[in-house]
Image 1 (cartoon, rainbow, N blue to C red):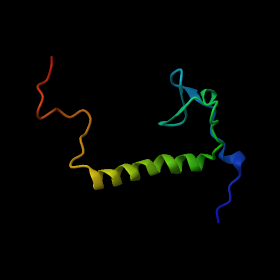
Image 2: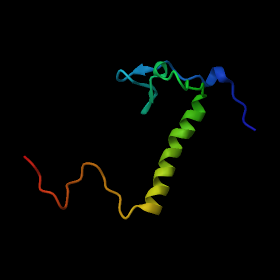
Image 3: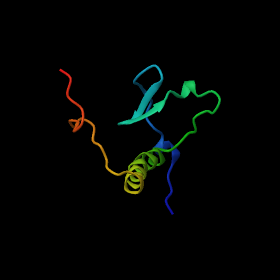
Length: 85
């Protein structure tokens, strides 16, 4: 059993990215909690936020393996469209 103290796992204060987006942990963006009035944001320990964030890649890999004929990478040149100057 893992025991954690919420005080040790409290996320850092948010850093504003845009009017509606904040970042608490590196590369983990979230909707500004002040905008979430109907369904308020839950308090989550840092380890749980990281677990969910890391699991998204596993989910994406699974979706690609089961449903994609091929995976396109952003930034690669198109094989079918001409480049525009």
